[in-house]
View (tube, rainbow, N blue to C red):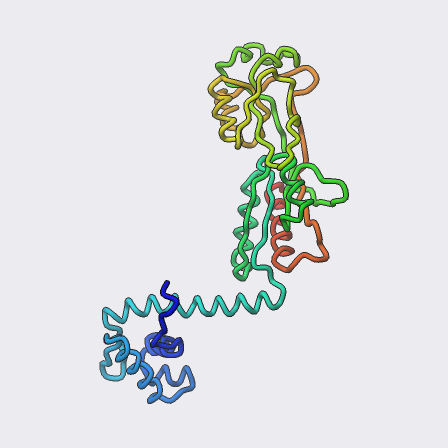
Length: 301
């Protein structure tokens, strides 16, 4: 971008040009804009002379676009729309509408109801950006307590925080069909599993609580996502705690096998939506909060 460039045309000239095209002629545009026809003729003529191209060709009383005019019209519409959005954003910010919302989302949480909420939020967002940060275990709590997010979706509520329940999530202990434990899937103790490799998901907190979900495995590999964990477990390399909703297809095809371990091989948890400071939350944050509650209520009904 050349910051020293000085525009020769004005937004008013482009708006007049657009009105002449949209209304079908100078007389109609003059009535629509409540201006004299001569002033519109002068504005468009001056614009054409400055650009050195013909934008309109008048046939009778009708103004028609030239080929160059068609190209310039499309670009000018983007320009004037951008200015309107910029001015609207300034007004929204003046009224307390937030420019950006950060949502911390625990990665075990299903994405479909979140995406539905965002779809509903978009046409009402008034230009507010949304940043979604995927977190694992104590990562959500850290973002929340450090004030780094306006909303959080998490399975464990930190002390002193309230949350709205969204959905129940089930974590199950699984292995690949080719794993040596597959034949003994229904009669295992923790001591049977401990010698085998376990896949765990990396805690995203700066000071992670690394022992969460650990089954005293002698070997442990840490990965950054459940999708990588699923692939490694399917290869028969290890066992892992995985969300049932992410592996339903693999369970049906028996690529993954659910283990039955004495003492428990299923962990159920409730996912919560947390608005850390309801009194200070801006209108965009409250709107997205409501959309998230509504989308989850719809998905669970």
